[in-house]
Structures are given as structure tokens and as C-alpha cells.
Length: 113
Length: 111
Image (cartoon, rainbow over all chains, first blue to last red; front, side, top):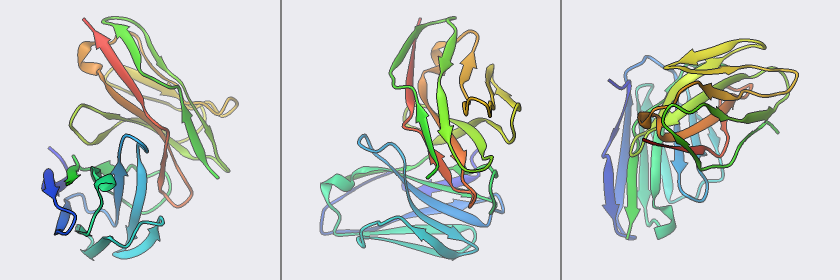
């Protein structure tokens, strides 16, 4: 059972493609996150959405474009990626506020060829 | 800024051995502390948490105690199993609620 669902689980895309990662949370949370996990940097916070507004963007290149249409859904739009962008992309959600547990999805494995 | 430091891995143990994974933190204020586990090919799962000093979090035989005086939150288990092989992440919750992670420690348990 997972309260945070990510699709697709695996994605292979060329450097000129445009694709999107989707995340849905069923936990009634009001904050959502994208993390990148790679061998070089285990867990990097990319974006934070709080009450559907982006509140943090950690110097992420513009080839990554997040979208949060409502409190349950989060997308990561991908275009003209580089091979070094190959990684596991993790979506997460929580209630806003310090100390609240953040719940993660199982991740989307992205390979850029 | 706030930060978390974990012992470097990999840690390799035999089944039924005692496990300790060290975690220390630097933070202003009194953050909540977490241990997450990532099994091969999966996302992160919350293992346990503690929200104030001297609290002990526990789950699945794992324990960690929030030590304010040593700014530590070491993970322990008395008898590990092969199924405990995974990557373990220590984390703190900053004042905005975001998690700051350590670099992760890989545990391999051999039968």
C-alpha cells in the first residue's frame, strides 16, 4: 500500500524528447516535493509546493518544469535533458509544518540516452 | 545551515549481529529527527522518528534515541536479518518542514 503513487516507474528518453513524470498522493496532504536521487548526490530537493504554490526551487535547470494543478497531483515536465539527468526521481508529500512526516512514492527511474 | 552527517558505508554484517549506524546533526532549535530506509529498487520508507529530546523512536526492532547533548540520533538493532539489507538515511526536519538528509549508509547483511 502506498499513499503516494508515481508513474511511470521507468522511463527512457532521448535528449530531444519531451516527457512528464506524474505523482498523485492519497493522504490529504497540502505539501508536495520532488527529489532527485543519483549516485553522485544521494538526495537532492528539487521543488517544494505548499498549498499548490511553488515555495522552493533549488537552482534546478529550466529543462525541469514542475506543475501542481491541485493538492493531490504533481508533475515534472522534462525536455531536452542531458545524460547526467539520469536518476531516480522521487515524489513526496506531507502536511505543512516542521516535524511532520514526509511520505515518499516509489520513484521514477529515468534514463536519458 | 542545518545539516546531517552519517557514518560512511557500506556496513557489512553477518546475520544476527548487532547494528549501529551513527548519525549526528547540526541545527538551530530543536528539529524532529527521522530514519528512512530504502530497499533495493524502491522509494524511501519512514522507519522511525523522534520529535523531542530523549524521545526514542522504534519500529521493526530498530531503535534510535534523540540525544540533544550529543546532537545524535544513532540507529541500532540487536539482531539484523538478511532482509534488513538496504540503504538507511538519517534526516532532520528544518523549521519550514523540509527534510535535510544525510548521505545514506548502505547495510549489507550476509547469511
